[in-house]
Amino acid sequence: MYFQLAKCVFSQHFQYRESIFFQFIGQLLRLYIQISIWKVLLQFRQEEMTFEEMVVYTTASLIFWLLTQSEITSSLSEKVRSGSIAIDLIRPINLKWYTFWEQISSNLFSLLFIGLPIVVIAGFVWPFAKMQPEYCLLFAVSCGLAVVLSFYFQYVIGLLVFWFKDGTYGRMLIGGLMEIFSGKTIPLWFYPLFLYKICKVLPFRFMVYEPIAILLGKYGRTETFFIMGMQILWIVVFWAAEKCIWHKVQVQIEVQGG
Image 1 (cartoon, rainbow, N blue to C red):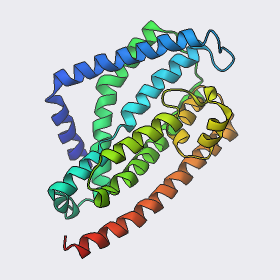
Image 2 (cartoon, helix red, strand yellow):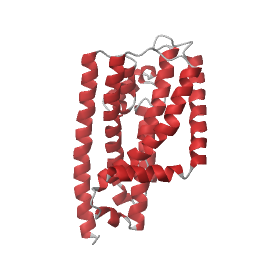
Image 3 (cartoon, helix red, strand yellow):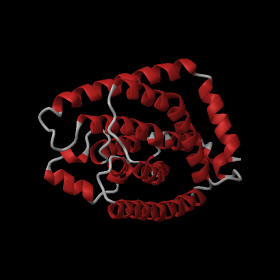
Image 4 (cartoon, rainbow, N blue to C red):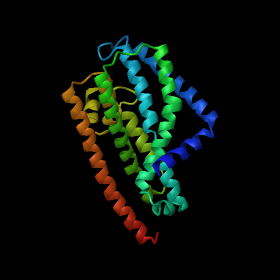
């Protein structure tokens, strides 16, 4: 069933080839601009990371953005307002997992046809820092956990549309928190101390910054496993929050006669 859903999502995206091309060009230009800016800035802040490491960080951050971008809030909001959510609730597949596989299929399409070609081009244009195979493997595991963690966070926020009926505020909240606290645009090494301490107690750094730091070999094996343990812990926290909110959603639907 999930495979068929992924095939449908891929088929839908293939209908908009021009859009894929322009997204590719847009993301490539965005990467070029970011790396060009960092090349200048690192001349004054070379102690945090080398230019080669920044190239890897910026490119990996783009991959994370493609893997974790989400329309969950908008999708749920539209379904709630139109009433089509009733169809999703009677499907043989759970709404959460239907939403997850629909979104992850869309993101994998973006990764294959936008992200990977950009990585190949970036590898020819800029020097990449050398990465150890062990850390690449640990990064892959941490990346998978980051994708699941990001989904749960976005799904929990998305469920709030059952009360607010509008996904605009949810998208703004998700975008703002991820932009500031995940290290998506600026690595946390460059944050002022007070903001860095705030990031340390929030889950968002485990969605982007920490997996990339593992890839760059910034942590030893013990610290890496600790980070993965924290990712699993935050997944459990958001899973529990999702269960609680979903229970209240079902109660509300029953009370309203849905």
